[in-house]
Amino acid sequence: MDIILLQDIKNLGKKGDQVTVKDGYGRNLVSKKQAAEATAKVKNDLKLQKIHEEKVAEERLKEAEALAAALSGMAVTLKIKVGKDGKAFGSVSAKEIADACKAQLALDVDKKKLVLPESIKETGKKEVQVRLHPKVTGILKVNVEAE
Figure (cartoon, rainbow, N blue to C red):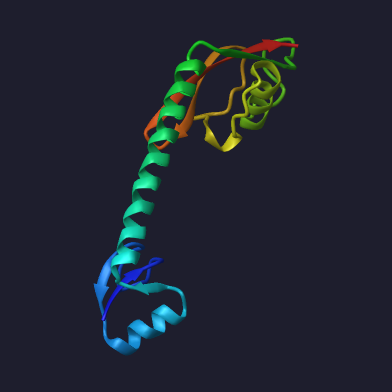
């Protein structure tokens, strides 16, 4: 029996794969909605679905590239408390940078997408990478000033 997998199944295949299995196993997978019989209609629907997913992925990539280009010219300013000798009390976190982006630039950047190799503990200008897409990384300038 030829079936098309509707979800990943261990030791059988990934979603969208067409596989040949024994009749009983195939009927079991179809009844559990994990697979569909490989008819012409199902094959065509799957083909159209893949085309749609590729188009959506391409649009997301273009949006991410546009946002990365926009971020390259932008900067946010954060203020931290500093002692007499110039040392900061605490550090600047990714959440604070994300909140500053929302307040100052009107951009909703997820804190999990900000890449801080080390915590920012001193004043000055820093560059923070923003992972917008698996293939696109933007750079945001962060100015840290003494309060």
